[in-house]
Length: 577
Image (cartoon, rainbow, N blue to C red):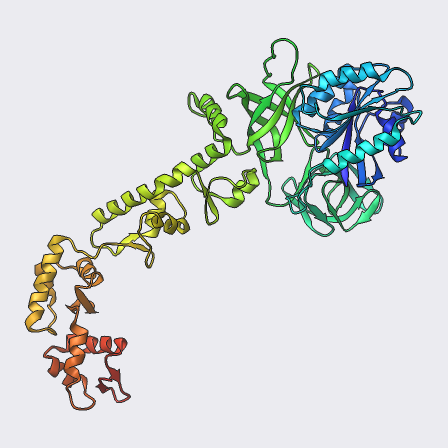
């Protein structure tokens, strides 16, 4: 399905065109039909060669501009209507300013009442106004809504527009702006809106203002369906939601996929107008989708501002909206959302610096400020496919480039402060670099280092004082390789638990038991001695053959068992395999 909105001055024939195209009555209220003007949003649809097309018929009267913006906001194309007998009018200008601010590029310019006056002047006038806007390239034609002249051509041109609209992503996260809610007998609360992308299915749960609500039923083009894929006009029957808990401007969204923000940074585009551009007031109304929210505007740069919303909206970078001045009845600026999770502006000059950051690129500023950011968070904020990818994280390129140097510095500092440890623990390195632990191996890969058993290994060298003490132990063991130095001798040499562990780690000594160390080749030499004993031997025989004490012999035999150099038999004797 394709969805197209109408736009144009009041009583220029928008609803008449829709009736001619669809055979349906878009005006929902008796008051609208009695007064001959559209007050609220109307909906109708028809079938074109390219498929079904639904129309959102918006009011043209200035008093109902908010209703008009609620209808135009989520729609990708417009049927812009100008009457031949009246030409360009005030609401024509405001509607065009709104469409230009929203960046709408697809549509048709239709001059109506061609049976009442020459359409050429109105067409030329409208073309002149559209020339400096996003609609400058739309095709144009003249018709008579009441008489029917030109309607066949209009349908053909609408089909061309429908075929040219970008294809929406059916797998996109759902955000359905509610433009109408009501209670249906036997069904409960029903909301309607234009689904821009994504898919809604009966039975799934959507988020409504932080609350998960089940989808009880769906309807599109007047028929019940099990699933709807954007773009589409859709009615959603919600289970367990009271009618007064949902209103126009609320949004049904995929749970966990959107960031409800009350503060955002945006780029502002002011409508083209003769004379100097008036400043953007501090108090305005932000229109996004079908929502209209009072905001405070704080300038950051020549075309950027911080918007503080009266209540949160589910927005992303790249969303478009409008700032409207209801007191002056004008569109003050178009809005392009740059960052929905901006930094606080607390220090002197912070606003100016933020404006410079935004001018250089909002997403890069976001990455620089927050360091590594999860891919999922970037998606929720609207920053997809940015930064340096490292697993499930993304980095600012400059930040990532500097991490390797910093990692080398952290490892060197840790080794200087902890010369006897096995290496720099990964969690320490991650903490000091400000990165997740699972990113550390990728950082180290750029330095030539690696992670072993949760550490960045220290070099196979001992501090000079420790190396000298170990050499003394090795000298003691040279003549009696299985007579381990006692605690007094170790203390005399300054070899405590940490020093001995370091010596074992670098392969200078072997640990036999707590406080019992031998030369690194002691297990191999012991196995050679024991191999010369006839048949299986006892622990006492091994002790005597090795010329050592029971304090050393018993744990040494257990070490040899674990290494496979000896085998213990059921009667507690041993043999060398």
